[in-house]
Length: 303
Ligand SMILES: Cc1cc2nc3c(=O)[nH]c(=O)nc-3n(C[C@H](O)[C@H](O)[C@H](O)COP(=O)(O)OP(=O)(O)OC[C@H]3O[C@@H](n4cnc5c(N)ncnc54)[C@H](O)[C@@H]3O)c2cc1C
Image (cartoon, rainbow, N blue to C red; front, side):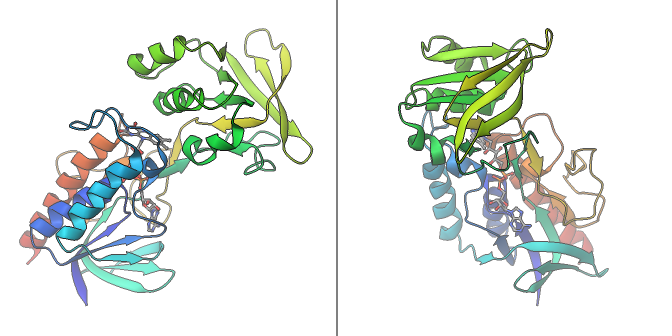
């Protein structure tokens, strides 16, 4: 069987592509390796998705899921490991099976970047975390460190300050890159100590995290601060290694801005997997819509 469209990834951009594709009456499936929802499903609160002043990531993605399933979306749980081009159609090689499709939308998003310092890997799950909503409650009334200075880091710090005793926020630049509105909220918090122009050197402990060593990037002075947890939000890396199309130096897929078609004809990209300036739900959803519309057009031209 050859589908019209296979969407890889069930985050916001994949679900948006599914809604547009199903309304265009394409014969499609969505393949997801874990659970529908993507990265945003672990966020406690979203305040910048138009029409919803405040709701959790899980609530938002439930609405996407209900909408797509209401249109008849069929989800296949599998992880795609490779894609080959047969000329007439593409073959997707999964762990569980192979799938044929005239077009593909790569909506596989991204996963958290690691710092690569001593202690990070050893203490992951034992004090080191990349998810505030998942692990924040384990650090109730404890001192923690948070590393990063972008939107996600500052937003997650705002969530954690309601739970923990104190946060030392470590950022290598002189100022944050996060939205001003969430920075202001953080500035008003009493239990946050800013360590700007500092970089983490090691995460220390025996069985679990006991401290973090940081260095002033100008003076090179080092300090070891006692903390029970270290939350890391230093950016993301795209999950695109399975597809052989043109990418930027970090692995984000390069696509034509007008159609979102990649260097492999019939393969489109949407969301955090694509190279662009702003990686958010709103941008991913827009790209999902555009990619599905372009896929429909590609099929019509090709028929
Ligand atoms: C903690 C946190 C807070 C955030 N807060 C906000 C916010 O407030 N507002 C906002 O707009 N954005 C926020 N973001 C960013 C937002 O989550 C992302 O921009 C958005 O989720 C990107 O959607 P996506 O569909 O492109 O990718 P993802 O959400 O990454 O979804 C990709 C999906 O593809 C699946 N997948 C990956 N590889 C494969 C494969 N090979 N085979 C099958 N399936 C695969 C994954 O399991 C995943 O479900 C936040 C992110 C984080 C981590």
